[in-house]
Length: 81
Image 1 (tube, one colour):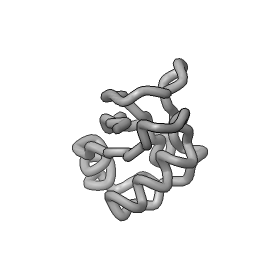
Image 2 (tube, helix red, strand yellow; image 1 turned 30 degrees about the horizontal axis):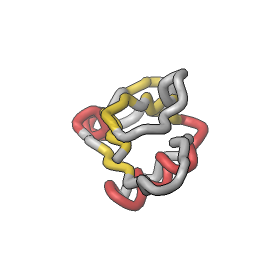
Image 3 (cartoon, helix red, strand yellow; image 1 turned 45 degrees about the vertical axis):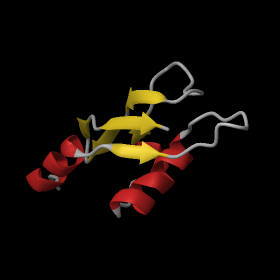
């Protein structure tokens, strides 16, 4: 089945903020991002549909995260902070 166009529009318009501590070493991964999608945006996103940048995210900043919805990728911005 095709995803609802409003789902894709919503995901493309999202800005997901992921809070990470600054006093410990960390690396953002699919599981952490999926948890924050649900926690911050109330959207269930399975970790396996997320594609993070190739280079590990270990610092605060703004990054992109691809979310595949029924084989239709979207790219909401991801802020690691």
